[in-house]
Amino acid sequence: MRRLLALIGCALLSIPAAPAAAGEPLDPQVADDIRDYVKGILSELGVPGAAVVVVHRDGALFSEGYGKADDSGRAATPQTPFRIASLSKQLTGLAVMQLVESGDLSLEATVHDYLPWFGADGSDTARITVRDLLAHGSGWGERDGTLPATTTDADAGAMERNARRLADTPVVNPIGEFRYMNGTYDLLGYLVAVVSGTSFEEYLQAHVLDPLGMTHTYLSQADARAGGVAQGHYPFFGVLIPYEIPYYRAALPSASIVASAEDLGHVLMAHLNEGRYEDRSVVSPSAMAQLHEPLVRPFEDVVGYGWGWWSYPLYGVGDRTPGDSPRYEAPMILEHGGSLPTFASDMVIMPEAGYGIVVLMNRNDELAPSRFYQMHLGIATILSGKPAPALVAYDEPIRAYGRIIAVGIPLLQLGGLVLAARRLRRWRREPPPLRHSRRWQLAHLVVPLVVDLGVPIFLWWIFFTTARLEPTDYFRVFPHTPDAALSLLAIAVLGLGWGVVRTWLTLRVVRATQAEAQPA
Image 1 (cartoon, rainbow, N blue to C red):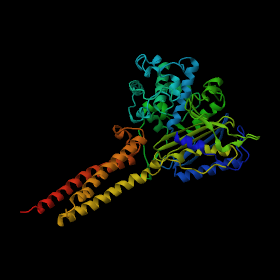
Image 2: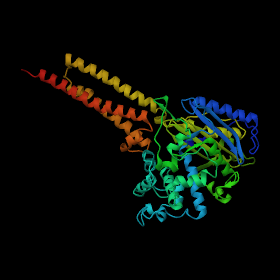
Image 3: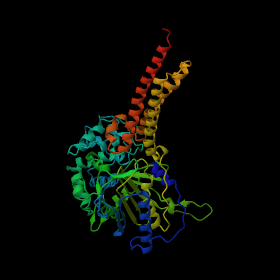
Image 4: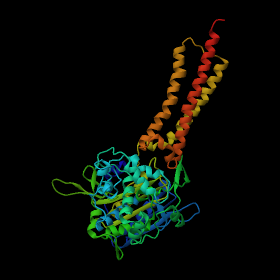
């Protein structure tokens, strides 16, 4: 959400040019501008492999792969499957709309109506509606929604167990108040399974993936591997390494689907073509129009969210209206990004211009992610006839400098450990004077111990409040941020462990010195 606000708040002033016309082949110069821009951004970000697709309602206008899909040297192509993270929500939203059209689901019905065990009669939990889930207005906290992405169970009961966990989770925010969380879409996926009488995977395959010709989209880890899913990469203490995070079946509807850029282009074609892809229709024109309408406006009046899509103006391509009271007007877009520790993904629909854009990358940096979620908007700017802006980092300082902190603090602690050990050895040879014992003990006992204990406690508190997690989640989130997790562990061991040992050794020196000072 911070990323979204920063993008919206940035008015990108640039020199106008002729916009490209959707439905016609891209002008070679526009295609070259997109290609050069993409290559430059991927090089700046250090992305090993990526795929970019630009479509209009009847077909692809630009479809290219860049770099390597994995360390074998296999090229990344538009057909290469990537883990798409939160772009999974758009497919789940489409499935829900199909069931709303058929009458099997109602936006105003409660989850309790379909799952009688979901909340006691009259409870807050029993008041949560399907609309609330689609608009992230369930009332649960963000941590409650991220826990499905820490459970690696892949059996058939994983989604139901997660739904029952949510049923037992207290509502902590007003129902209807926007709080982005994956868990609401995971619960929607389970509802799709319940009302359709089949599994979520079977329903999505038969009613969404097959009609949209999504032949490189996978709903299980085994199928994704067999289909050649790209290798993700993680910046381990700043050094990019191949890294695989677990697959989470309970989080499939919100964040675990694997798809190619080409397949996601088919989804965008259906959005641009009133629900049709080639000769098949996945929803009616009126239902597709409803999919483009926000269900809630979380920020001011210009930003909306619903059905897995953010909607807001593409400010960088707007213009001032003429007249005595000019206004700045910009075309509306539908947009969403997906973030995993090893993958970054984006889609955008430009309804007025008639374009859809997909960007998939096999690396990310969740400590400082802002620059990984701008390329799709830059391409949209080029298609609108203006030069794309340079990448701008707007991460919070604690995140932007997280890896420096993660390396620097343990090094400082090790340096302090060495100095303290040398001082203790010197004191054993030459006992310190205790004429000002209270001041000396304050300087060499109290202050160091407070620092040793305070630094790890403070950093752990920062880490878990920033991630909206609890200390009990430490081993669950370890696979997502291994360098930060290892650094926190090292800081705790050095701070707490050495702090206690050093204090004990220093007290021994004090007592020995005091004993020697006693008259015989």
